[in-house]
Image (tube, rainbow, N blue to C red; front, side, top):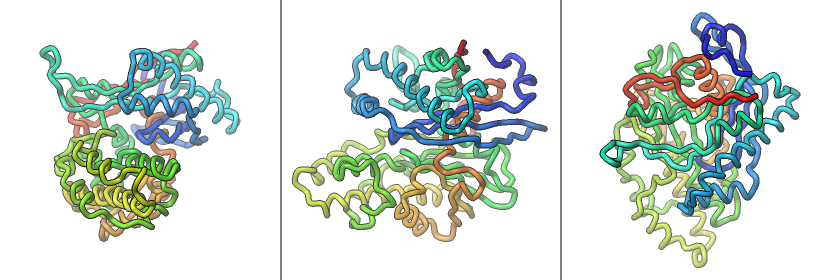
Length: 398
């Protein structure tokens, strides 16, 4: 049944249960959340009803990595949206069974999709300045197989209006994480790290937010390549290694770090010269385990340093940092971040009642809630878009 999106007042007149589906740059699984939202007197509130992370089928993961590495055929582009819709439905069904919340209780689904391409800088094509982004996952297919209303493809509208299309979480941060008495930053360490700068009592157009650079994806990639593990649990491998000063020095000079926001990035972050350095100096068939650990340590150091460096450059008055995302479980990475951040107080988002692993899934459920109410979901001060926009494409189920 289609929701009452034509009538914003009616859609907002009662609590709405929205399923949020998030898959990130690390390709480490599907975050599924059931969240109840309400709005009263212009204030949003939410209650997380259920959350879990589910693994992709191994074949799905292989296909995603093949596409990320450029092995793309039109058949793959066609099938990936339907394959991911099936994976997302499976995650929703599992969470429904485990939580006891029946699918009939869900008012809508917010689907981020799997980012396979994100190029926010304009390229001249056929006489037009074109920005582009591709989050795979068919909105229409997921709506059809779940019988529910689905909102997805949230980044495209912002990019069409000249924005970066990212990050989108800052709109959620503004409504749910700002403080009246502290200069606060909301940090997410996913595949990519991003921050939302929330100075005390800030207004919507005061907010700045941007990707600081790598989060977990480089560490995860080489941990899998060298050690056969999906991630460096607790940062134990990194803690046993030494910093490659040459490599870290090269990476610290990547121009992106000094770019002023708005800015966003993706898995193509490393310049080719640095990729060649890693290929030549860390050939898996010849280097020792000790040297492999050094690379993991160096990449971990880069993540911690780049977050702190962006704060030093663009938010030097920060007093408190609220962290979420998978990176908060990397104890060594967080230790290095605390060392780099000086006197800034660092807590994870559970401090404010938001489980760190669930935050992005909650956010995209909220973006769907806003889109179905006809409310804007982007912050032009963050993305650089020419105006606010209602985000996403919507498909109705049976």
